[in-house]
Structure formats: C-alpha cells, structure tokens
Length: 54
Image (cartoon, rainbow, N blue to C red; front, side, top):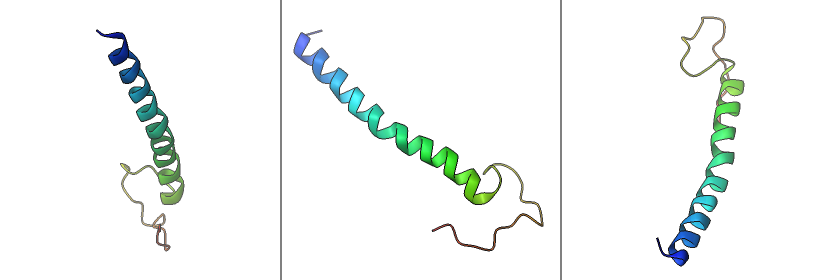
C-alpha cells in the first residue's frame, strides 16, 4: 500500500472513530436512563414514563 494512502486511511478511520464513539456512548447511556429500562425489555405497567423524550 502506498504510504500516502495508508496515512490518509488512518486519518480517515481515526476521524470516523472519534465521531462515532461519543454518539454510541450517548445513545447507549442516555436511552436506558430516559426510559428507566433497557430498550429491549418489556414495559411493566408501572414503569411507563409520562414524559416525552425530546
């Protein structure tokens, strides 16, 4: 692989990772906190949140 291509791809992958990591962390931490449960769990009758998430 050409050295310029290798440098470009490493910078591109680094920028993609730096962009995606905060998005993934925010989604997987804030969603369960806002829902008071994990998204895949069934909703218990007493746990339904009366507020809108946005």
